[in-house]
Length: 115
Image 1 (cartoon, helix red, strand yellow):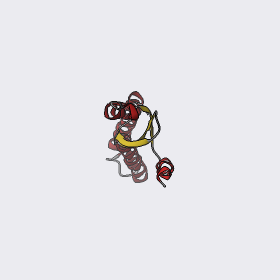
Image 2 (image 1 turned 30 degrees about the vertical axis):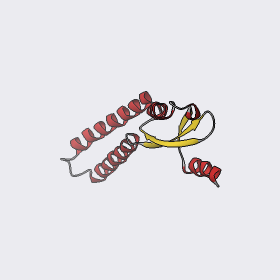
Image 3 (image 1 turned 180 degrees about the vertical axis):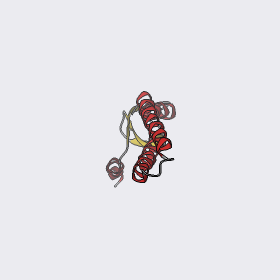
Image 4 (image 1 turned 90 degrees about the vertical axis):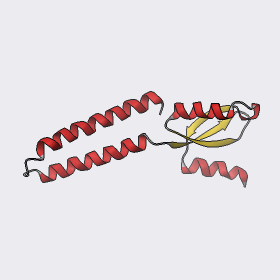
């Protein structure tokens, strides 16, 4: 996800949280809706967890044009590429070809090159 997409999704989640919190505040004085309040509060917690995950750093794998790889942590694809180029493009042997979000499988597959 690039910077613009991250911001758009973050704004959307924050708007949903705000809307649900308005509904909770409107219903709170009315004790006849405890199940509804419980569901709405659960939705807010879930959305806040999504927002926290979205706004936290993630591990990215860097592929070099001459082969090889490394990892770094960044908030999104754009930042990962920028950081990778700043860190590695000064050497002809570590020119950054691409970056992508890692998974357990991608790290395990890359580590097999060492065995």
